Length: 346
Image 1 (cartoon, rainbow, N blue to C red):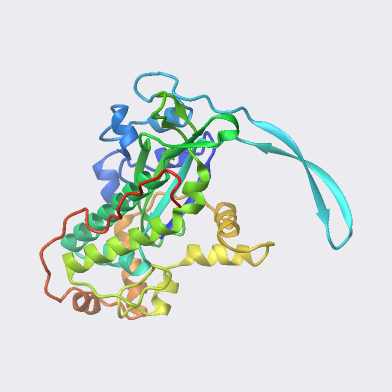
Image 2: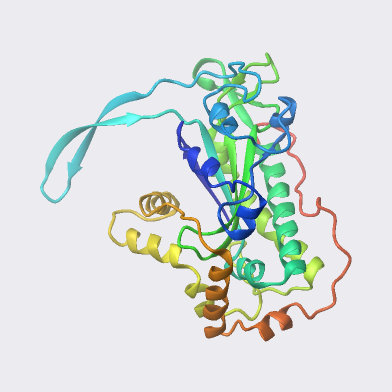
C-alpha cells in the first residue's frame, strides 16, 4: 500500500527523532533504523549512505545538506480569507487560514498486515528475507514514480512540463505503528524540488503527478513486487488481490483486525467528520496521530505472539506458512514498468 501526504517545513522532525541512538537501542526497540538517501537527484548532489542528524531538515528548507548552497527558495507563508457556509443554519462566515509552503512529500510504503506479522514473529532468516523483499519492492516502485512523476513546471503559469533530473529523497524504515502493532513500512521523504534539464535550476515538483496521477499505479507496483519477492524467497502464497492488495493465504480477517488498532482509530475519527475517501482518511490519520514512545521490544514481541495465537497464528502455523520449497532469489529489478516516451504521459 502507498499513501502520500504533503509536508511543511518542520514536520520532518518526527523522522529524525525516531532514529535509534545506536545498534543496542535499535535492537532493544528504542528507536528505528537510520535514514538512507534515495533517488537520482540525491546522487547528483553527492548525497548517499546514512542521513545524518539535521540533514533532512536542512534539505526541506531548500538548502544543500552538506554544502550550505541554496537550492530553492520556498514561498512565504500566506494568510487567506475563506468563506464558510453552514447549510443547516443558512449562515455565512469568513475565517483566516494560513497556507504553508509544501517542503516535501511523505510517501509511505506499507506491507500488508500479515507480512508485518511474519516479519515481527518469524525467525532471523524470515525477518531478513521479508525486510529485503520490502526494500526491493519500495525501491522498484520509487524508481517507477521517479521516471514518470519527477516533473517540474516552468513558463508563465507553469504551462511547460519537464521531466527533471530525479528525486532528492531520504528513506526511513519503521517496524511498528503508532498503536504499537507490527507495521513494517518505509517513509520516503521526497523534497519538493528537482533540477530542471533546460537551465539547471531547482524548481518545485508537479505535486498532482505524485499525489494523484501516478499514486495508485506506484502502490500497485509496490504490492506486486513484494508478493513476487516473497513468493520467490519464502515460497509464500496469497489471497486474491483486491485493488492491488493481498494478504497471505490462510490469514483470517479477525487476525488482521486484531493487529490494526491504528486503522480502527482512523475509522472512528472518520465517523465523526464530514467527507470520505482518500483525502478525508489522510486528515483523520493526522488528527489521530500520537507520539510513538520507546518500548521494550522483547516484551512487546511476546505480547504480539500471545495475541496472534489467540487468532490462530501460532508458532506451528507460522512454520506451515514457511514450509514450501524456496525457489532461487529473484533480481531486484523484477516488476519495474517501462518508461514513458513523453513527459505528458498520464
